[in-house]
Image (cartoon, rainbow, N blue to C red; front, side, top):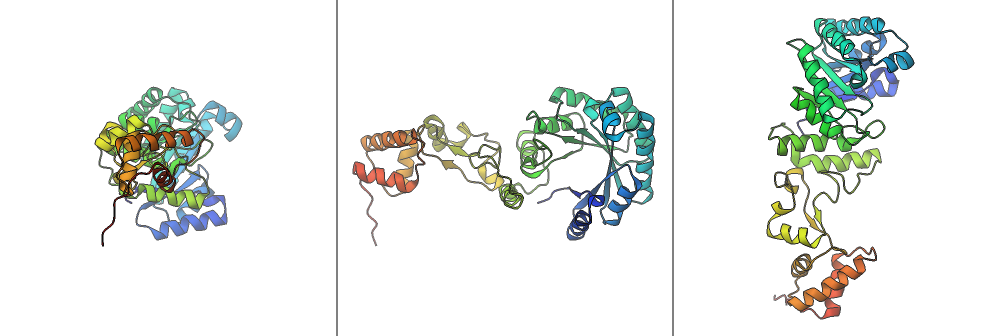
Length: 345
C-alpha cells in the first residue's frame, strides 16, 4: 500500500517474536524496524533479525525513571547515548525515543535530545506515552524537540488515544515540524490504542492536501483484514473504516446526499477513495427520499402517497429497533400495493 516503515516487533521479547520480525523483514522491500531498550542484548537481537532500522527507547520522565526503569537521569542519558552509538556503529538506521516525553521536564528532555543527536541518531521519536497531551501542548513539545535536534535529525511522533486525541496530536506533530508519525491499523494499541493509520493518512490526504504515497483505495480492505486476524472488532462509528462511516439514515442527510454527496459528507473524502461504498440506511430517522430511491432501485414505481405510507411503516418498525432490509421494504411496498415495473423479455 505504500507504507513507509513497518515496526515489526520487539525481537528480544521471545523466540517467536524474533522469528516473526525476521520473517517480516525478509518478506518486504518496505523499511522494517525492530524495537529495543537501551540494552546491548536488545539491540543485538534487533540487528540479528535483519531489520534496517532499530528503534531504541529509554524513559525520561521522573516517574518512569524512578518506578519503572529504576535509574537516575544521568544513568539514563549515558545508556541512551551508548545505545545510539551501538546502532550507528552497526550501520543500521537509528531511531531514539525519550519515553513519556510529554511528562518529562523540558530541560532534561532537551538535554537528552541534544546528546542523542550528537551521538548520531537519524530519528528522534516523541512519544505521548500515556496519552495526556492536548494538540496545543503536543505541538509545543514537538517544536521544542525540532529546535534542539541536530540539523540532520528527523522527528517522528507516537501518540496514544487515552482521551481520544491520538490522531489530532499526530497531526499537530506534523504541523510542528515532524516528518513522520507512528500509527496502527484501526488504532489498535496499548490501552485505548494509538493514532489510527486510516484516520491519519486520510486527514493528511484530504484535509491537509498531502500526497502520502499510500494507496488509499485499499484502506478499508486492510482494516477488515486486521479486524479478522486480530479478533478486535471495528466499531460501526469508527472514522473512515467503520461500517457507518458513509451511511445515512436521517431524512435530511439522506435527501441531501442523494442530490449531492458533498452536502452531508466531507466532500474531500469520498467512500471510493478508501475502497468503501455509500449506504442509505432505513430506520426510524429515514425520510421519503431514501424510501423512494430504494423502492425505485428495486423496480417499484410508487406514487407520492405510497412513498409516504411506506415511509411511515419504516419509521414505525425502526422505532422498535427492527433492522429494515431491502426484502422487508419490498414487503411493505406489496402491503401498500405499490406497482412494480414490468420486466419485458
